[in-house]
Amino acid sequence: MATHAVILCGGRGERFWPASRRKMPKQFIRLFGTKSLTRQTSERISGICPRSRQLFITPNELASLVAADLRLPRRNLLLEPCGRNTAPAIALAAIHLSKRDPDGVMVVLPADHLITRRREFHLAVRLAIELARRGLLATFGIPPSRPDTGYGYIRYGRRLAGSGRLTAHEVAGFQEKPDNATARRYLREKTYLWNSGMFVWRVDAIMTAFRLFLPEFHSELVHYGSTIGTSREPAALQRLYRKAPSISIDYAVMERAENIAVVKANFDWDDVGSWLALTRHLPADRDGNVRRGTTAVKDTSSCVIDSGSGLVACLGVRDLVIVRSGEAVLVAHKDALGGIKDLLAQISRQRGGESFL
Image 1 (cartoon, rainbow, N blue to C red):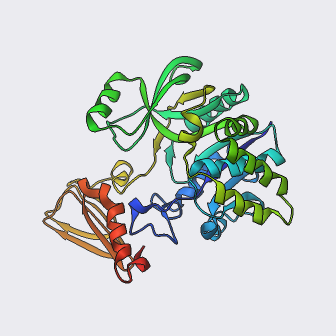
Image 2 (cartoon, rainbow, N blue to C red):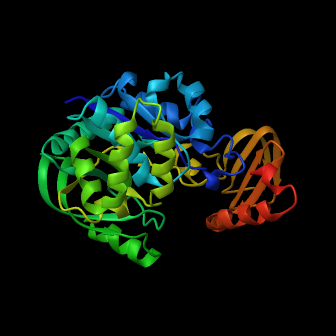
């Protein structure tokens, strides 16, 4: 019963535009240090799952980026014809692993998360593996450090395993992204965790869940599985994704299953969801500015500034995010970053706008 890492490398990283583009999304750029988030994720889990037991799920158009970043053999790459959210991506990995190691355990990780305190991370994953071997579908919940409205939450109940600061619990409920008042209540009550989007389960357990909760898709998945390694596989994969629902694994399985558990994690975690993540992980100057690259500031405070390969100079501004990348520049108030996807949609409608995305 070997353990396999399944690393989800899709996603456009639009909230990190203009540094993140369709041809080079967030998970492949070097935001923290000299390695991409994808490479950091691979190295972080390698203490439990060596590179030979890591599967990278990526859309066709990003395959060359993954392979170049990690120097991967073809066997470690699974290519999606198109994006269909996390449930079909995880199902694709599960059906392949069911052929390679039907008794195996899957550790499912997004490629673009930042996790520190590696030892604590490994201990939490090993506890989740213990739960998975008992047939449970395990996820990781992060004790909230602030009333964040950008995450879903998990309410946890009775302790199932572990001790001290590392414990696993029954799941009492999943909560959608809350408003600010509700997020503050969750923080006060201390029975809610951030939903990290990371999972551990046995291959057969998640396949059973797909059969129960997505029966039509499961039938297509099994048909595709019968073609793996044959000349019929490419056409069967196209058919599978044409019929696949675009649905997250949370909606498809986790919010409907009963055999679920949450590991209350004690490692530091960030999904790096916007430019404001830099303020949590990079040092600020005496005026509260977080600066990357070549910058000059005067009478400037509480800004995030990334100059790319050029120079950014700021005079008399505060609470802005200013990012230069190639031929594109973003200037936004920190409080307005939630509208960046609408801004990109507007750019895409402009003549020649697609070339900047």
